[in-house]
Length: 528
Image (cartoon, rainbow, N blue to C red):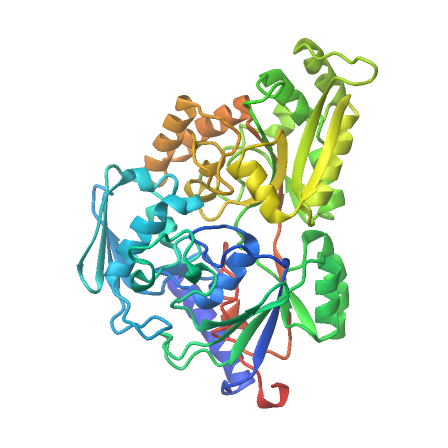
């Protein structure tokens, strides 16, 4: 089926759904549950924390996004083109757009966002060193010039990766500590209104939103509910309209949805969600490659997929997630390289000089954010490492304390987290392995710095489309050999939403890391 026919089919389906639902009505509030009580910043140029990303979709916007098929859709950019040599990208922007405070949006804001925030953005670690120039020849044109081609450049300007920031708010000030990071001015369908600490964050309709006539809702309230069972109970009891169930909750959520008051939506074209263990290579005994190999052999990744994720995840195959079909090379296979084999793990530790003594070989601290599913993943790892004679202390911490410990201070032995791969390795995979002397959260905290790998990653990212699998095979081979990070599982993604909302087909027309911005959804007057 051609792309045009497919698009037409989707359009007809959406039009039919809208016709059946009637004309959108204005008014009402959506309450969305977030898995947090403390959110250090709402500015997702500065964090890739999941709760902040969910909230950013309502107040922030960017140059482009993706539909449910993974096709790029224009947002603040109406068109874009690349030069033949792949070094120059030109974006044409919408005219007459205003920020939520009424000030005009121009190409200067795009340039400012890149120059002022790029060094803080965990997903731009590959792009920033390659930028030769960023300019705004006029108010509606943004031009990016690179020192060498980067095939994934457009992926880096998706609104989830590169939310636009207002120059008139931040210019000349410390952007990392600016008060606007907690009370943002943006381009999204809603604008910041208020924050009740530890309870909720409220956004109200942005009358200056560029997509005129939208949003239909008066407001979106994010209820801060850290307990996953309480989030599920809240949607069952009609207290919230949306939440993302933990993978371990999906089946229970689907069963509860049989009451018809809400439904569970699978984000079929989802970005990779990979559970990992980062290893601090600056500390003994993790400097020893045989020790790292032993730790990988000692983990039953299939058990984590089945027990923690209830079968809604699969063991990771190599550093390049299987979702990247054109890049993933199955010849590098953790199932063959590092199968679950406690006996082999013990022998490797013996060879590395860590034999059992009184039932123990050495001690490690395993740091983790004290929320699910990370806690459960860490508990399985702790149990299985303990079974081969490692004394594992589990440090379950508040998110901010964990972030400071792992990324700011690098005061850890091993750490469990789930990382999002976004749309390309350049965005969400490279950051785990490229040399990193900084302290950007969720970027390589392990002390691993291998010029051979960095060169391989650079070559893979610059290879033309259709010719990247081979360089990414080399990339995966180096990671599989050096093991600064152990990739465990790749999880599916689901969201739950109440059925009293209309316009959900259009609202959920997204993929990868996009979340509802609530610009398309509406509530009949009888439900408001």
